[in-house]
Image (cartoon, rainbow, N blue to C red; front, top):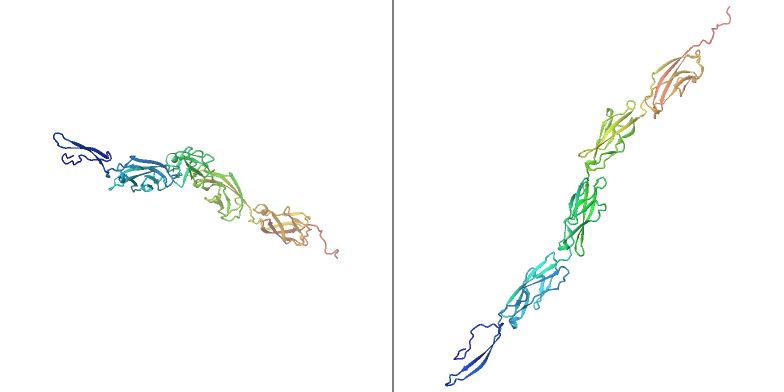
Length: 483
């Protein structure tokens, strides 16, 4: 205070937020003599507010956690609150979000500071949001402060395990050792924690041939394989998470069993028998070797070879299909049968083989005519020979067999008066009537030999019968008496 003028002056700065009213007492004193007089007055100062205080949030940061998917749009996730020590409009606060990628998913009530969900939450797309809220007072000029808000998105079991392939396949040798791991299926679940823990299983391996590690997805052989029994397997493998309500996916695993040459060629007999006619046309198939091999690919492919018995190479064996064909003209009259040994070999890297014999009988066809040992026979016969007496035997030769060599003989000419006949049982020429040298001295018969083939073949010979005189008559005179 100025002691002479009574002017009051400030000698410090004021802070309304600390003390908003000041009361002082001023004493005025005169200079009277001998006695001074004075009076006192009370002065009250009110400190007016200016906007000198920033809004202050009641927390240094805000954090909230919410489940994905099931949290609805419009849900009040968190409330922020700030205060301002100023008064009046200087303490009126409004809230806003600092624009950012994260804050775009939310809205805020500018008056209450309530923050709402503006979009669906998907933890697998984004599991954490961090944005800034600004509190602004209404002072002129306004003052602000900000605070960070973080939203944690909690996982729910909303994703199925997903295999890294649409299907799997593998090939196993049939001698693969039991316990060998040959394939690993991989499935991932983009959830977290137990919702992402995958358990594997095989649901259709009724014979227990395979097993799977439920944690790693490694598939191994649990039983023996045999290509000749089962060539392929199709497994249905599932991946299930450990969520409260588990979600499950499945995939097909195709397994091909690879053949090994563990089976030899098989023949159903060691000896085979066939009969073929001697006039079989060249190139005619006469026998197919009935060999089988339970292996596959080259292990089951067979080749056929003649090893012995193919005299004069009369037969050919096709190497690829095991067919015997006639390769040269056959003649039963020269060779009646063949005993051909053949071998069947597979084409495995270490081959197996089988051995058998083909017995071939050459059957007769009527390709040889009867043959008389002479084209002309001469037989002297006494006229005194008796009726039904045999005077000659026929013996033509036919090198065929069976009916083709069964001969019958017949007189085709020269048998005037039917003087002779041939006995069909004995092939003998017999006299059927009395011969008379004095009436006829000779006969020439044409004899036919005919086999029973179809068609029949024949040969012809001539038999000359010369009658000899028998002294059956005494001499006679031409006259009964002479003079």
